[in-house]
Length: 455
Image (tube, rainbow, N blue to C red; front, side, top):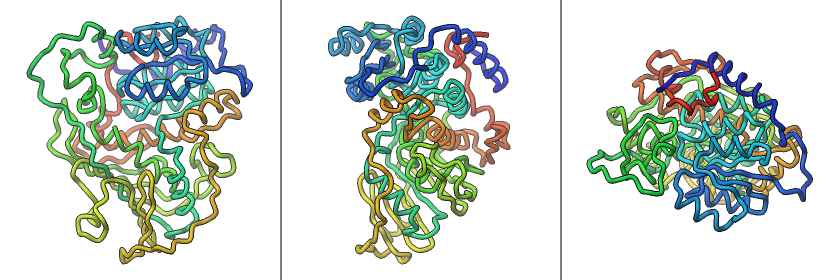
């Protein structure tokens, strides 16, 4: 009842699926006017889905899908004309002619199955972070978005904030010189607890649909509704949960793409449950200015700034950079520390502080003139780009950018779970370790593969 797709087999199967879908009317190929309503279907109706639905409520919400009937009915009261489905696969099949775009706000293990099905139908997609559950899924979603020319956005909402833009401008403007060292950390912990009691499945929940592609497990309150992030079959711990928010800033500011090597430490590996802490070292190659930067989201400002090789270390749980442990810098709760040859920058979601190389705070910071346009809002940006169409629409966290970042993030868990330092060949999609290569992909229950089990 499970299957593992090789890269070749996936491409063959997705092409087969796409060929069949190409016979259907493709409404997303029409460029909408600014005042036209985008027809949206949503996968998920609770948690982050509430934020996403409210953010696109000015458009036309055509359908909702949620495997929990109570949540589905509650959300339906706000949009009584929307059609309701428990299975998003059925929704995408039946509403294909009626929708232009799809939002995906589910546990991580549903991100790629839902997103792939939408992309193969030519639907624009907004998907919450992390974009996918596995490294293979990230690469697949990147390729599907390009093949089907869909406007995409990953839900890293802080990317739309003004502070990140000012930090990027400062670092790319040479405010601390050439940066070759970055520390990124958060205190978040997600690690599944031992299952003892076996409470009954809530009457409103279709447990089989919630499990989706994952192996069957008995219902347990530590898996649902919230703690699934602590289990490998459904999430990736605090690492996968938060890294796309925080390493987004160095990826953007330094034009990072695929790492050369990844080495991740943590507690003894549990086959079922995620780690309580990780310290992960990424080595990124030097970048040539003007090559493959931020995914082309801002026209002339999208070029890679170039720079030397970068050593980035990720910490989550109770681990912190040594500079904080030594008392050289305040013990901030989380953020990024950029170390250049002329100075140091600390930045979190809402602030930026500059220090000299002796860790003394610099108060009279000369900032460059702002050149990155302010965001209309993370969802608003995506909606506007959907209406403009693939060739003209621009989003700041399109899947080329955010998918590549997701690949790098998830490689950290691959290194940790394999117990190996890995070198990464992005072009050939493989590491130097057989144990790690097995963790790039996963098996899917029948009916849930990214290609829709077309072959």
